Length: 197
Image (tube, rainbow, N blue to C red; front, side, top):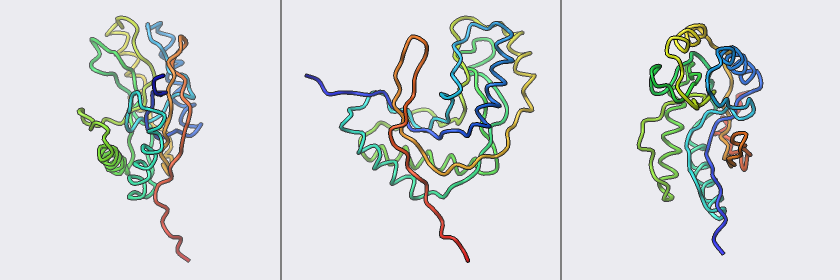
């Protein structure tokens, strides 16, 4: 009998207010009738590292790597801002909201630490440069470039209130006919700074 495996990734979860703002973008874009599989609100997250299929026995190793990375970084603040597509409007495959805020460099540093810590335990390094984004939908067919340009332009000034990033989460992912279902397996807190006074 083979080892049990799970599809997994490490991500930053989002507060409800940010998810709600992103759902408003989705609702507007849905009026265009694009052939898109929309990500459910509870499934929108900021992926730091996609691990793919891992053995259940390797979950604890993964969590230990997450802890080593997390203990080097204090909590910081981000916000969702702007929208876009990958790879381009003419052949869009992914519709997303961006990540911004004064602490974005700290996000990049956290992701680099996580990638290195997991590589130390045998996970492959990311080949592509990290591009923090929030996937809102994936195209199932050709999207009209002119309609998509219009839909995107409506939200170019979009930005949420800043939110605090104080932990990273290991999720399992099950691919079902209605879309992926994500379940948190373990949460790891970032380094807590000593309180003054």
